[in-house]
Length: 162
Length: 162
Image (cartoon, rainbow over all chains, first blue to last red; front, side):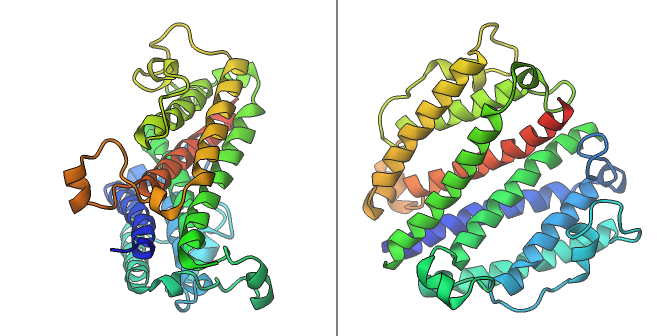
C-alpha cells in the first residue's frame, strides 16, 4: 500500500470509529433519556443527536455529493436552538434518519480516490481554492469529525444526568 | 503540491486548530474557574486541562519522539481520577507545562516527512504492524485530536457553570 491511500485510510478510520460509537450511544437511549439536558438549561440529548445528523447531512451539498437527504433537520436541530421548533422528529424517526445519512456518507467516502478527496468543497471559489488548496473534502471531513467528538463528550455528561 | 503533503497538511491543520483553541480557552480561566467541575461530582476544569496535557505528553514516547517532558502529569491527571492526588500543578505551572508540551509536539509534527508519519507507533510490534499498517503515527495523531475535542466540549459546559 502506498502513502496516499494509507493517509486517507487513517482519516476514514478516525471518522468511522467516532461515527459508530456515537450511533451506538444515541441508539441505546430511551425517550426519557433523550429528553435530558446535557447541563441545566442547555440542549437536550435529542437535540444533540439531531444536530449531529443535520451537520452530517449538510456534508452532502458541501462535499458535492448531492442534495441533503433530510433538509427538514436544519430548522429543527441546526439553524435554531433547542425547543425553538415545536415539532421535531421522534426517537425512532431520528434513529432511521441518522443511520440513513451516516450510511450514505460512508458509501461516498469509501469510494473516493485521492484526487476526489482533494477536490475543493462547494463553498470555496475556484480562485480561492488555487490559493488555499487545503479547503478540500478531506479537510472538511477531519474537521467535521472533531465537531462530532466535541458534542459526544457533552452527550456523555448528559447521559450521566439522566 | 502533490497529494501526500496535502493530506498530512489537512491532519496538521485539524490538530493545530483544536490545540490552539483549547490552549486559548484554558489559559483564560481564573483559579476559581479551574476549580469548577464540568458537571456536579465530575472532573474539575483543572483536571481536564492536566488530563489533556498528560495525554499529549504521552505522545512523545508513543510516537518515538523521546521521553515524556513531564512524567509527573500521569499520576496527577491521567492514571488517577480527579482529587485522588492531593498536590497537583498550579494554574501557572500547568499553563507553562501545557504550552511546552504543545510547542515541542508541534515542532516534531511539522518536521516529519510522509514516510516518518507512516512509521509505526511504539506500542505495536513489527509483526503486527505488517498486518496492520494503519497503526502509524498519523492515525495516532488524528485519534488524539478527537480525544482533545471530546474533552473540550465538556470543558465548555464546565466554564458555563463557573
